[in-house]
Length: 249
Ligand code: NAP
Image 1 (cartoon, rainbow, N blue to C red):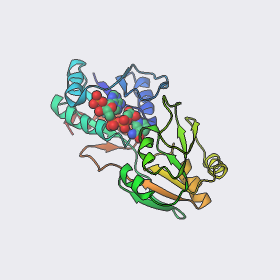
Image 2 (cartoon, rainbow, N blue to C red):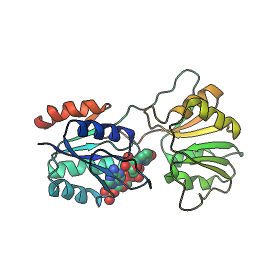
Image 3 (spheres, rainbow, N blue to C red):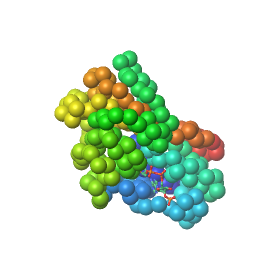
Image 4 (cartoon, rainbow, N blue to C red):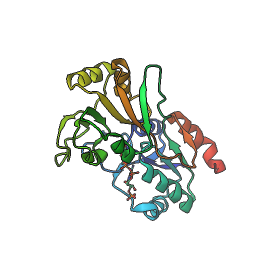
C-alpha cells in the first residue's frame, strides 16, 4: 500500500491532500512551520524541518514512506533540492507537483531579474512607491534601498517590525482579485510592483492589476530548474502513483 510524504505549504499540496484522503490513500502532509495558522487538512500533518538531506532520508526510511511528493512553492529551492537527494538516498520514487511560470501578456511591462539580490540592485535611484509582493522572508534585503516607500502584504502579522524605514503593512491572506489589487495600488500611489514568478492562479491578481494600470513589474525569475519529474495537476500525481512510480521513473 502506498504511504506518501507530501511536502506542502501550497494550494496544490492542499488540493492533492484532499484527493488522496478522498481515495483513502495514506499520506502525511509536511509544513515547514512558517505560517502561524495553517489551514486544517484531511490527512495527518507534521511540522518543521527534517534536518537536511540526511534527516529527510531517515524520515523516509523510519516512516516507511513509499513515495515522496514535493509540492512546495517554486521558490522553496533548498527543500526541493533536499527532496531529490533524500529520495535518491532512501531509494524512494519522487515527483514534483508544481506550476508553470507566468509569462508576460500583451500590455505587461516586466523587467526580469534572476534573484532577490538583483531586484534590490535594480532599485538604485530616486524614491519610488513600490508594492513588494514577496512575502515576509526577503523583505529585509530591501533595506539596502531605504529611499523608497514600500507597500508590504503579509499572511501573518510579523514578529518584529520590517527593517524598511518607509513602509505600509497590510496583513491579508487573500484570495485577492485584480480589481481589489488595482484599487490598493491606486490608493497607495504605487508606481512599481515587485513579484516573484511563482506561477499559478492564486497570486496573479497583482500582475493583472499592474497590467490594467500600466505599471511596470520587476519580476524575479525562478531558481534554476531541477532534474526531476514535474507535473502541474494533482490528478497527475495519482496517475504517477498508479503506474510510473512502480516502474521507478
Ligand atoms: P526553503 O528555503 O527551500 O527550505 C528551507 C528549509 O525549511 C528546508 O531545508 C527544510 O528544513 C525546511 N522546509 C521547507 N519546506 C518544508 C516542508 N514543506 N516541510 C518540512 N520542512 C520544510 O523553503 P522556503 O522558501 O523557506 O519555504 C518554506 C515553506 O513555505 C515551504 O513549505 C514552501 O512550500 C512554503 N512557501 C514558500 C514560499 C516562497 O516564496 N519561498 C511561498 C509560499 C509558500 P530542513 O533542511 O531542516 O529539512
